[in-house]
Length: 147
Image (cartoon, rainbow, N blue to C red):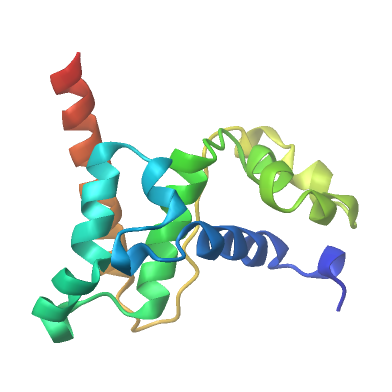
């Protein structure tokens, strides 16, 4: 299956971009840390830093949860994707050329930020959603405190 026919082309491209930005995250030396708010950088360090993760052992996010959290942060905070079409254009523009995908993502129902965490049943999606809510709440509170 070619990249332009892949129904998960956006997810694959976003994950690849995210993984590139997060190289060295566990050591506090990833590019993403310079592209996010200081609040987000602190959370990423707390959630995924080597020392913090070692102290929690079995209470850490598993790889799929970590990827879902990081993909949402990259899509929203790093790329600033305002619409589904915008996200496609930034990470998987070639995927818009196949079939009716461009027409579909250009529909009014997709004219707002839209993120999806495709995870299997039993993989603790609730933990991912809670982490993303905490991320948003702490950033909102930090922004309000700064005026």
